[in-house]
Structures are given as C-alpha cells and as structure tokens.
Length: 376
Image (tube, rainbow, N blue to C red; front, side, top):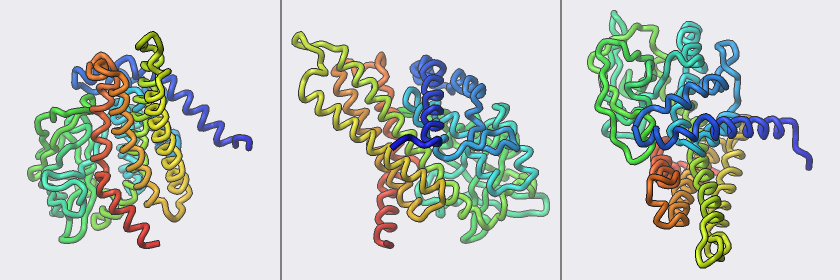
C-alpha cells in the first residue's frame, strides 16, 4: 500500500523536527539538567520554527497544527531533551483560551505566547490532591470589584517563569471555573523552586494566591463549566504526555543501540551477544507498540470518534510505562557507564519516572480504562 499524502506530510515534518532537535536542542540537554535552569537555547530556537504556536489558529499567528503534528513534535524533542519538550509544549495550554475564551482574551493572550513574548502554565494540582481534580479547595468568589482567588497550586510546570496561569478554582459547592491570573497581579506569589529527581530543566514551584483580586473578564467562558473545559482539554493533552514518554523511550533505545554496537567485550561488539539482542528487541517492541497505540488514539481524537478517551488513557499508560522500562534497560546495557552523568541514559532514566505520575497517574488511568471497558 502506498503512503497517502498525509503520511508523507507527517513523515516530512517528523524529519524536520528530528533535525532541529539534534542540532538545536540536544547540545544543551546535559547543561540544562546540570544547571537546573530553563532550556532557553531550545526555546529561543523553537520560535524560528513556530513551535510554541504550533496548535493555534493562523488568525493569532499560529500554524493550525493538528494533534498528530503536536505529538510528533513532543516525541522528537523528548527524544533528546525531556525538559525542552515540556517547556515548548506547555505554551499550548493557552489552547483552552482559544477553545473557550472570549474574543478579547484570545486577541490579548495568544499572540504574545505564539511569539515567545510571554509564557503560560496550568494551575491544577494542589497540596492535598493531584488526580482528584474535582476535590480542589482553591476558591474564586465573585465580588463587585472582580474575582477574589485564594488557594495554593502545587507542582506547577513553568511556575514563577510563566507570565499567565490558568487557575482551576471552585466557584460554587460543586462547580468550578478557570481564571486567568498574571504573575504581576497583587496577591500572587511563588514557592521555592522544587529540587527534582528529573526534568530538572523545567521550572516547578507552588503558585500561591492570597486574596488575589482579578477583573471579572478574566474568567474563561462560563465560571460554572470549568470542569467540562478541563476534561475536554485533558483528552488532547493526555496524548501529549504519552508522546513525551514515548520520546524518552525512543531516545534511550537510540543510545542503547549505539553504545552496544560500539562497546567490545571478549573481542566482539556487545551487540553480538544473544542476551543483548533479546533485550534490545524487547525495548524496540515496547517503543513501537506505544507509538502504534498513540497514533491510533490520536486519530480517534482528531476525528472525534467513540473510544477516544479510552485509547488516550491506554496510550498514556503504554508509552510512559515503556519510558521507564526502556530507560532502565538502556542504563543496564551501558553497564557501569550508564550510572554516570556523562551518558544521556542516566538523565533519561530520571526524566522517565515523572511520565508515569503526571496527567493522572498510570494507576488512575488503568481505572479509567477498566471503566470504559466495562461500559462496553
């Protein structure tokens, strides 16, 4: 069967992003991790390709990139630097504003993000809850002067570095809204940067709201429908996080193959040994299985077909479990050298762990999958 035009377009795009990642991102990956700083070089370089604006409408300076082009981008960036993949793709959070915000909000907020003049962040997780979004205690009360926000958001990617935060807060006993909070607003402060196992190049800290008063027009859409908006946004973003794990897995496999081909023991390349071949085969199968499932899920989401939610969760679990498994085996195949920071697999193993935790832990994803399966 011949490839379709769309297949060729995606393949060409993947090749372009891969070259970009190898030339503009990979050279700084180790330094960004070691210095625990944002991947500024990769972020600035990504603007030339328009990656921060990839999914946004051309009306706002974006590229109208669909969900498949988005996951290709994340995978190829994460293949060499997980922190850079996170930083670039976190800009896409503003898609929630494009989907549900007012025309004024779109015109004001999206172009600066697309152009790299401003950055954005989610404000979902709280100290007492991550997976249970409907259990948030952060509150937003409507007053004559505006919305009054109080609460603490934890583990916020781009925390302190982003200019705008989409804060998920309770507006009524069982209703929620999404609010646009600027880092310049009074009542906003930031916690100490977290010292993390991995993804050290992605800034993370608490966002603290203490009697933070914002204008009434800073609510996204209906202040009682934030839960619906979040669920709609998480479906597509779950694929992005799956792609993140897949990229780490592919990168670790790349490093393991290159190392075992170049390393000699007993007068032969390590790659000649049968047990090594078996390990590499298992790693490759996990990567390809994850990619196939992810692409299937992305197609369902793109076409708004039944089963999209179930397969998105399946892809998230499969790809991120592959990230941890393949990265662990890649370190093993490097022997003692895999334990050293001189080799990328050491960083990849540390980066892989978070992919099984964020965007709904893989245990929560399995419960969601089972629920869909039983529902038939």
